[in-house]
Length: 476
Image (cartoon, rainbow, N blue to C red; front, side, top):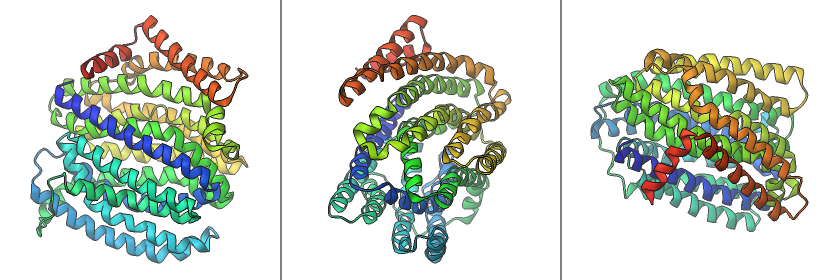
């Protein structure tokens, strides 16, 4: 990796873990102040705003990062078009709020839902800011913007929760996060929209971006479909446990995957005419990300009962099975991300869309079977494990032809990390039977996990370990 790419990767990694780390701590505090029902209601609202936000954050955003020749006029053109889209979407959500409240038997959701949907508007400017900084691999600015947003919004949310604001504490925290991040980045990113809109350029960007947009919409809808079903079929409390179990592994996965995607897409797009270089970048990404993510997921699954009881109290223990299932289903997300970003970097968003349709078709079929045949939300969560395995083959298949990187080559790169992660999980899980205080037990499990994984990495000479050591030596 060249110095610019490495620097971008390190800052993006710091930004993701910094932001997710602060978010993680804030959510733990808020979870101790609020109930699972509050989080269940928030989940319903966020599902619909996230679907709307796909039109803001995906498609044009990715096209701006992938296109080799982007001008300041292009940024302004995309800004105005996206702002119009956001206005239309907000109008739809505003009108739909009473219907959503009636469908989920939550009449009190209407006003909070209309307020939280306002986050679409600061999201418009933020999407352009993120596209610009991603092209420049200048993730230091993203770090400052996002850390400022999550820190200030978190303090406001906690203060409101202490004051007894309930659901409104979560609404305020969610909206302010985007608003503050956009304001901070306004002073650091050299972008101010001009009164200019080149519809020809917008059309060209859209010709690439619409496939990414549709793919992201399908993926987001599929990811949220489980929550929509649980919220309707069971209760807001059950949905709160389900999403809380999802949040813990998602913290790590979002940090790793978004780092890989944000840094590797512009890097690989720059080398799209040199297949061997794209392959090498992708191999490095898969080896490094799998070496970091597999043990994180294995360790988190192993310490889950201790961690939840210690951080969130025993009230949240019903989320443990979901947490462990999501650790398995999300473990391969960075591998998926590397494959999909390579496809995008090669300019084949058409293939990207086809893959999403195939994968989500299989996933929806699995979801229908789970709902029809099993009377438990755990079965719904298990569908993610099934689709994870099928997606491994589906995502990797096109890259054999595009960059000569077959699925079996990829397996050789990540299976060693997977094997020693499973061994580490066994050691961590067994350590959980040691009788001592919760804090002592958690520390002991973490120490055992780190020692076992590091020792096995050295004994078997894992390439991921050698790469990580080189990166750390550069930092030091």
